[in-house]
Length: 194
Image (cartoon, rainbow, N blue to C red; front, side, top):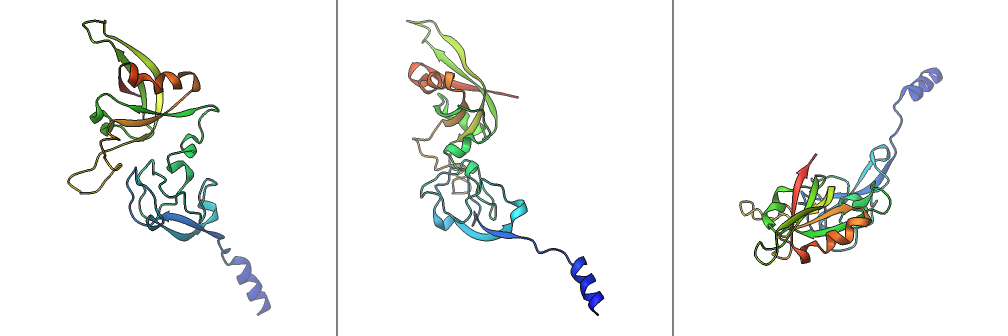
């Protein structure tokens, strides 16, 4: 009997180590301002949890989701607008908010896509119209997507007029100032690139 007991103990699967972790308590659209009611704590396998999780600490009230989360998805720092959005980017990379001239263009964009940011200056009368690329292959970190009227709920953000046409891109510091002030100098637009 001792031999059988030892054999069974040796062959039995090892108990998986788990930790408590915050997950989305319901489907949450990108742009959601997080509150404790949006999240719940579950136990998950340590082997499946990345280092950038929140554990059981709720993010600061009003933190905004950069991407949509399905119910049960662990919440990571890289999913919230803020310093976590720049995780994995080259040292010195900054997040730059841009307001596109054609606000509806931002509804076609998604986090993770790469764009060339183009500035068009002049009006064709007093000054010649000139376009130039301010940044090439900038990664989109976040977009403000308007409310889907068919669903009656935001599937990107609150869809307010203040957010219309707003995107956030990752950029090297040498072009960040030019990008940030572009809307004051002319019209900003983007071109999707591979």
